[in-house]
Image (cartoon, rainbow, N blue to C red; front, side, top):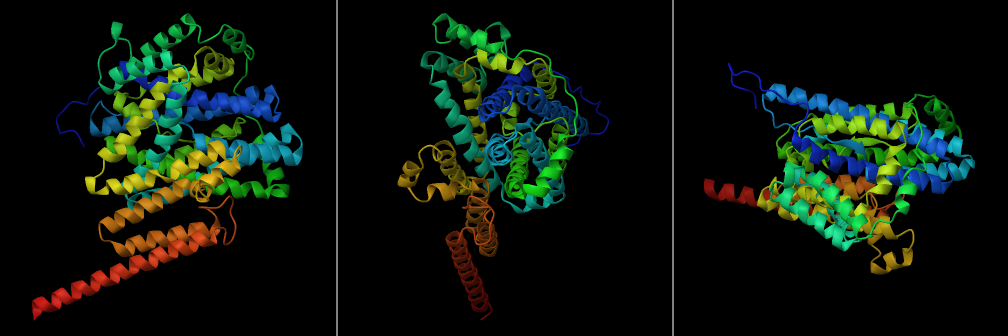
Length: 506
């Protein structure tokens, strides 16, 4: 909404108190990913020199580049619409994509080459290609956004928020019940009910200070945390290298199979960005989805130039930051802190000192705000579509967390759990889109979405572990049958309309 002519431009602050809450929420999202990356890669046999000297610095450069850009983009939007309540887009490593790159790219590359250095270079090249693909996808981003119903896209995001964010973090909250429930209460009072905290401290900061102090006072956090915290302190400069270029040669000469993993997860990443930009528009800040997908792709490529191996995305936590009343300061601070923390090995130290149960309730709030937004920004008649779009991520959560260790148990629950979890983002959006179209009696559009779902199932983007021809034949047939049914109802409505018109004429 443009400012009326003659009004002086508003002052959009570099930083405000609310940015502190949003910073801690975004910082915890990213720090959790950084710590998982470090622990997992070290466990796979990658040396600390690669993990702390290459991969984390590369990820930090990508996070820094994207956050700085989105802070500038927020200022541009604030100037254009002459308002101060603009929130910068959150930016970081996508958690589902991170797991795919850990176990679908890094681990196979390590097993195939038997060499950690070569495997890292292959993964860097795969990351660079993923960024290039997402930048290319940006050319059609706006078209896709206009043709996919908001209820379907936000329902899919709410599914991620319910399982991987709010649900998972509520489990973590209750690992230390006394501490976790106290911090959760502070978050509900301060961020949901918007009651001021003592000493006018930002809610998240107050919660972390109180929770951490309590954890050590009652003995839930042992002193060994401090000795673990300083193991990897040092200086890790943020320097570009040619690993991405060397890795491209390895990738195209003997490891093309890795690219079959990169393509679908990059499509997922582009859709995740689109969904989260859509959620921000629903919350009041309209950004260009094509620009955001291009920035995410370029940010991923920049990270790869510095040794990073994980694609980045507009973060699901953005609406939580909007609810907190954040501006651009939290985004700038996040970029600066990650650069400094990575260069000096402080990320592992901070993660070791602060118990997970203290910061988890902040992410429960982020998940709550995402789920609430999915419903609040849609008409009540579309609530069933939002609910249906959330469900595939329940299967994805069960599959991701338990299938590797307890495959028989997961299959015993239902043979449909794993297939529903594979390509959950695509399944969620398409089922939601079909439901919206049917609610609106646009049966031909519903049939089109069913045909797309059949095509995705046929090539393995949905309901299959990998890309292949006729990868999920039963599902392909099932969606085609759905499409035929929708076309029948389209024909029936057209016929009924023709009869009604003829009756009126008669």
